[in-house]
Length: 189
Ligand code: 5GP
Image 1: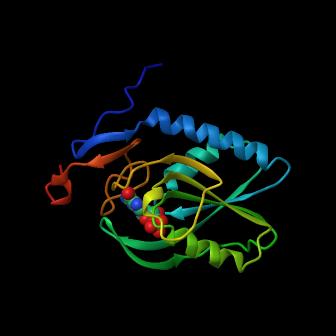
Image 2: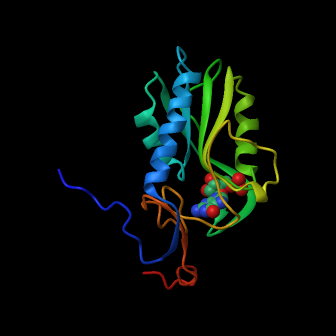
């Protein structure tokens, strides 16, 4: 078996904010809490596309209780700016009536996305609904939203990696980082 140097830095990244190792340790912690809290229940983990894909898949691998997954896709961002208007692009396949729901999100910023989703999903009468979010920018909140299963609090900076994009790029980085200014000017590598 070979040892892998896991965090080779992308040339457009100015600095790594959260390393791959720290992300994976946090996901293991969150999975252990979910295992404890949902013992003998079968929650539905709803991934919010596209940003939560890496988080959801790594979380799923570590959760040992019986569970299922579904997806929703919403959009409110253009480039690195929130438009403030949340649009539902893809809805769930299954009914969530009477089910325990865990909404899995990449980041809570203004809270508008999760505020919209929470309101929308509560009309479908789930048994419970809680939020799991890898990142949280508490300083920019416009809607009161709190994750029951939080990952990391970060300052009000635009971040990419581990599912988060800038114009659809950088989702595949295994860490969370901040872009060099040149990457925004279209001069990225
Ligand atoms: P909110 O509706 O809470 O303002 O924002 C939630 C969504 O905005 C996230 O799911 C994510 O798609 C996007 N977002 C917010 N902050 C960032 C950021 O720093 N980087 C990236 N790539 N997306 C962000």
